[in-house]
Amino acid sequence: MEEEESADLSMELSSLLHDLHLCPSSSSEKPRPSPSLPPITELLSRLQEKLIGASSDSETSSLIGRVERLFQTADPHWLFSPANQDEGWAELRAAYGSVVGALIGCAALPLCEDDCGSLPAAAYQSVPPRAGAACSALAALLGTLGNVGGRDGLLQTVAPPICVFAVTHFQEQVWTSSASRAAAQSLQEALLRAGSWRDSAHLLMGDGGQEGEQNRGILGGILDVLQPQLTKDSWQRCEAVKLVFAWTLLQVTRPSLSPHLHRLLPPSLLLNDHYRPENCILGVRCLHHITLNTPAADLHQFNRAEVVYQALFKHLYTTDSAVIQPVLCCLLDLLVVLEKPPSSLAPSSSRRKPCRHDDVLRLVLTHMEAEHKVALRRVYASALPAYIERMGVAVCRHLRRLERVVLGYLEVRDPPEETSRLKILEGLQKIIRVAWPRMACRVDELLRCLLNLLLSVSADSELGDSVRQTLMSETSLCIKLLDAVSHGNLQPLLLQVDSSCCSSEVLSCLATVTMTTER
Image 1 (spheres, rainbow, N blue to C red):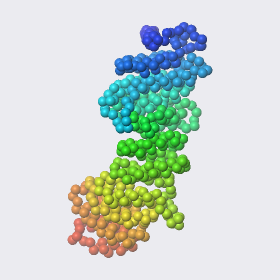
Image 2 (cartoon, helix red, strand yellow):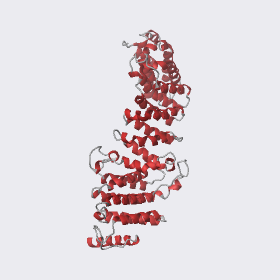
Image 3 (spheres, rainbow, N blue to C red):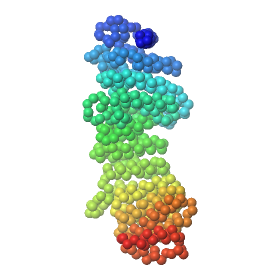
Image 4 (cartoon, rainbow, N blue to C red):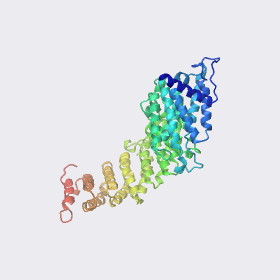
């Protein structure tokens, strides 16, 4: 039985060689693994030409199937041995790189003719079947190559383009189907097995400094593949490029990110600067990841941190809540790189001169005062407590505007979760704690607003019980803090409140203030 199968494989290989016009030879000036077979580089070269020149889907599919069968059944020693043992490895690596590129090219995505960055779904109709077939052929190559240990850099040569191809097709996008996504995922798993990589992060970064092919990452190789498509004029022509780049970048952490920063930062800035919100958000995510995973010294080099700050700061003028939210989070982490937090400075430290923290908070408060869109109000309110905590006592420079924002936001309902009000109450608590010497003159106005909030919340039948209890509890805490900064002067006023003017629920909340003895 084995003899019959071997004969079938031999006939199939002979048929393939005949179709490629590679006549078997019995002698050679240089030793070959098998005297009846031509050098593998010749075969790969002819396969590349055939794959590129295929004129129909059926011809392409048939040829990819034969290539897969070749990688599955041919003698590995013949597949991965150069004709010239002294100088042939470079030629062999180039040949495999070319045939892998040709296989990937069979399922290449169509390019946009302009910078619109999107094509109709019909344009990708033929991609999933071709991608599935190419994935199977490449997985067969990796399976055989992994069994022989990578063979002198061959795996490092083919891994980057294969990884880019797999990532392109295992994501749920208009150019993929459930079958092509499953095939791409299997290809990615085959790649990890071939190089003994634990996961995608290990695949990209390796083990850092340890010798051995399996300990080397392929991040540099992937960037080599992506770089020609990541220029200002070309990145928008293929929708997959930005997704593969973002997937790659977001897997890389310190210290592996810094050596490639000069190649990772420019595409991130290009995405960030784009007019389409989805691209902008992706760019902000990339910049935030770079900020968190790059040493401050590297970000300061060549003024990179300032460039990123200016690129993000301009987004504060947008009215898209989906963009503002990640921008505010990223700026909060980037500001620590650019300057010391105002809250960490000593009182005598240049009188805490205004800085970029002030610039950001001032602009945010300006927009908060005039904002009427619910989604944006929630984003601003959610970000405010963290900025107040970062500013510390330096928030006193913004107290007047903060007071107007707090009063304005507490007056407006935000059902069903009351996110804006709860976050503003959290921010108010932080303000009172850090700026307490300046709060005594603002107690009356704030107390009036907080009491009105208690009354309106207790009478709001549309609120859920848990939300109502949380709101009233946070409001009571704010009143307690105001009582503390006024040295207990509020308690006589609060004791005058009785059931004739408010509900028992409100009285219960106020009791938590009047019964406390702590200052």
